[in-house]
Length: 205
Image (cartoon, rainbow, N blue to C red; front, side, top):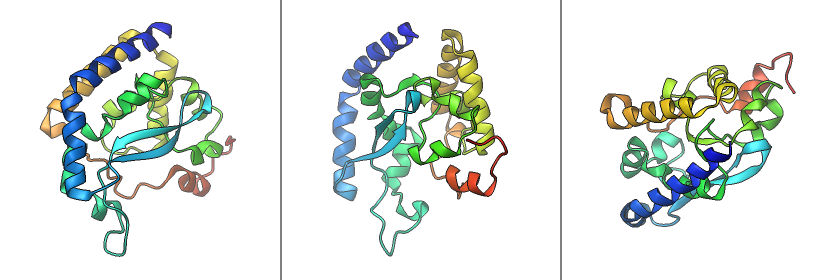
């Protein structure tokens, strides 16, 4: 949708300008509490299976003998950033570049590509999003099939009306403390490639 891309550009530029103080303060806090690097980057899969690097503010210590699991590595600053979704603000630059949209399926790892079914991989027909239909229905990590079902519902019904609905629901989840308990720790959910190898569907790719 051409207008959707235009709106992504306009709103990402406006938010980057308006949130400049946060873009200055948060890296300083990260540097004081954890040192460098300030930004976490990782390869993800975008529209039409195109790879890109996603950016987030760093929320975890480096892995070592003392800090092994994600639960151990995340700092109290990191939990606070994730609680209010501030760690995801650098993705505004991903949106501005065209890697992502404000609303769409969350981008996943390129390692997962060989394990989607022909239907599931249709989630990559649109740009991945900062928030999406799956996130407003499943704040905590859902089962993989439930996540893909929500992603495909969005792809099959994409519209400004649906985007507006998702945007409103996202704001409500951010401003309600009771809706904001998931700080991004999966609680042991398997990586999708491991899960699919153990539960291979008959119509897999």
